[in-house]
Image 1 (cartoon, rainbow, N blue to C red):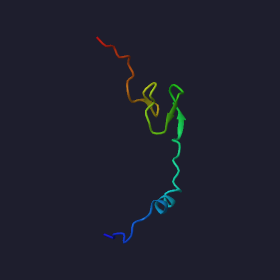
Image 2: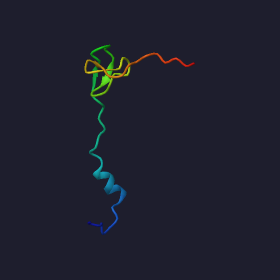
Image 3: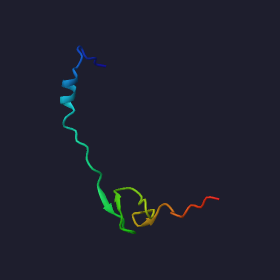
Image 4: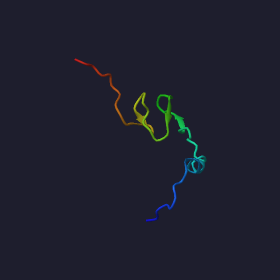
Length: 63
């Protein structure tokens, strides 16, 4: 493997990393209930994914 002959300064390292910008996730509306959901994720409100029930959302009772 290649090894650096000299230490890369913080300034030089940071200049290389300046082009990266974090992007916001793409959002869509749930086809079942209409809430805002990330793409490729199950709806946290109703539990549907691509028109099918993925997770049953039943009220939890503690006894």
